[in-house]
Amino acid sequence: MSGEPMLSVKGLQKIYQADSGPLEAIRNLTFDLPAGQLTCLVGPSGCGKTTLLKMISGLLNPTQGEVLLAGEKVTGPPKNMAVVFQEYGRSLFPWMRVADNVELPLKAAGVAKAERDRLVSEALEAVGLGHTGKQYPWQLSGGMQQRVAIARAVAYQPKVLLMDEPFAAVDAQTRADLEDLVRRVWKQLGVTILFVTHDIDESVYLGERVLIMSSSPTIIQEDLYIDLPAERNQLETRALPRFTELRHHVYEQIQKAKTHTADVADAEAKAAAN
Ligand SMILES: Nc1ncnc2c1ncn2[C@@H]1O[C@H](COP(=O)(O)OP(=O)(O)OP(=O)(O)O)[C@@H](O)[C@H]1O
Image (tube, rainbow, N blue to C red; front, side, top):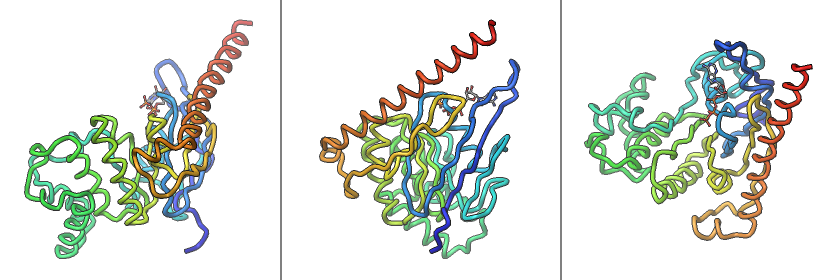
């Protein structure tokens, strides 16, 4: 393996042309994700997390800068990337059985039938749903449906897996189980994951690294290494003094980012008034 990052975000800026005039959602983002790293991206509401993910996944053109996947510039949805969205209810086809939902992107990619069957059953096993292939999504609970969405992404064997607040719509207990599932699958498969959340505790519990975004116009407020043990456990890890320190730190940084933006806005308003 070369030292080249799996994903490289370079000088990314996005200015939307809104009805009220240009809106600079993202000012300047630069970061690299090494192969196999699990990174969480956390920031205040409206800071441009979705805008960034759309640019990384080739759905939206940046105003400036570029995204490289394994050294190649992203100009449209890349083959080697999969995305898990928040709204599992809308991401699975209700008229297709679970196994067929998981198989769909593999079919589209032209993978042979025997290989498809193997990948689908392995992925469903990996998320603990080996027995549900013949069921329909609507016969499963919300948490199980989100596991199907994760299985579909995993079966596709992406180099990079983007997760956009994937657990925001499930209950707290299910959420904890799904967090552990993500860490397990990540360790088993060695995939590079960028996990977006606005839950500070979740970012610290899951990540090997947390990127803290400022308020819009967005920059990286801090790039934080999470020095918690590799083996994590919902009860023990969250009870560690270091966990508490890290979550305090992330919280403070986000508060600071909000204040900083308010200061800049105040200064700009004063300058415009003079
Ligand atoms: N298509 C668009 N046209 C104009 N402005 C937009 C558009 N999409 C997003 N924005 C603005 O860009 C900024 C960032 O939005 P974005 O949805 O990326 O943030 P977010 O961090 O994902 O938000 P949340 O945490 O609420 O999900 C916001 O000010 C939003 O109003």
